[in-house]
Image (cartoon, rainbow, N blue to C red; front, side, top):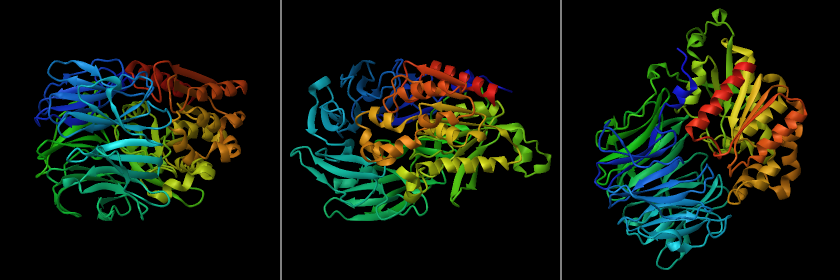
Length: 611
């Protein structure tokens, strides 16, 4: 049975959970109203209580450790200039704690007594982030500037005795640093000196505040779990991820209990245990969660349970609560599926194909129901090659397509499309070397990977090689345009969502706070302008031979809407069948339900017409 896009986009997600100070209530985000809002829950599968009622998205929620109040974030129209709010859970009163709509605010957590919170903001200088501390009852510009930054800073957390802050600095996607800020003296100590590109992320204070536990790739190709002794500066391995990244760690500093995850070929592998020494873990049973991805761990106040968000290959996103000692997991939230039976959700197959230079490229292929049986059984002689395919390319580029739930993907599968999701070179999750294979002058090698993936699809017994479309968002939008201009004969149509058309204008116009980070990946305007012009699809738009649909948000601070305007103008001038759809109240992607319905209904109609 075919369901409408409205039904699929009403499949809900519950995520981003935080335990209340009593250990009984759980706050989380859920998009039941069409945009993510704050909800609370008093027990497993009970009726949730909606706490915020805004037309704009809530970006995080965090209970106070001591009071019946919680903090949450919200921006306006997708502009990413997040403001911080405090909600009184007893009265329902909401106060805007920052009140500076022109600045970004990045939450840094509550102090252990709940009297203060920390955040990073670019309110002083749009291009850099400073560190602030604010009393819980202060508002607006009452916040105390505790450190003037010179780059991309965020607060990773308060020390156990609340006298220090752990500060994370990102110089590039794969070049990070950690600092410890003494709040009394104002001294900022750099605790991760290194040479070259090294990541230090997911940092958590250890018990007693003498060490920090984090994931890093210092001296390795993949991320591993490590302990950094703040006195000696020694970095010791706690868990070696082997061929796969340790994604992150959550640590309860009072009990020494922790949960860490590994990204094994895209799937999340969860391990829980208790510190038996500085680098020794006594493991407990792992939780039984849906096969797919999981994260966002939050410990209950006494450490006996933890909440975790899980998204299965064929199940929508929900919050589970796990008994630490036994690993018994219980789903607390009941995000509905809008009447679409869960058993109809299709699951992907992990495949690999060889690219032009012999590189092994992983991808997920999901076939619609009618094509699955015979094709997966290898009965090539009896399978009609009649299935259209959407090649869906992720953004980033330092990101990874993983087997988490997507209602849009399920919608297209229900309509008879197969979905092919390649993790081309430059994707994260496969080690540092793999991620750097597309840097700067190697940019177009990732586009060649897509071509190799399409050639692999041509040999698949279920695929119609004449009905393959390419779709992607953000950097994936650039990949769409590059695929259309570099290999025009491969495609029946292309869909570019908030994509980059011209690297020069993109870098010139992206948010001041992002430019340096993006130049580290793509190349700099000062040194690489000619090369950036040469690979910008807007300059070779005359090569496009298939219809193009371009969608964008007018408030996009990352990839400004001018990228959409110029590619559509140039494509129209060349006679390319082109459609454009701009949302005035969206930013880098679409969050409002009515906009998503309009966008994906239009995309479906476009693909049905041309594919």
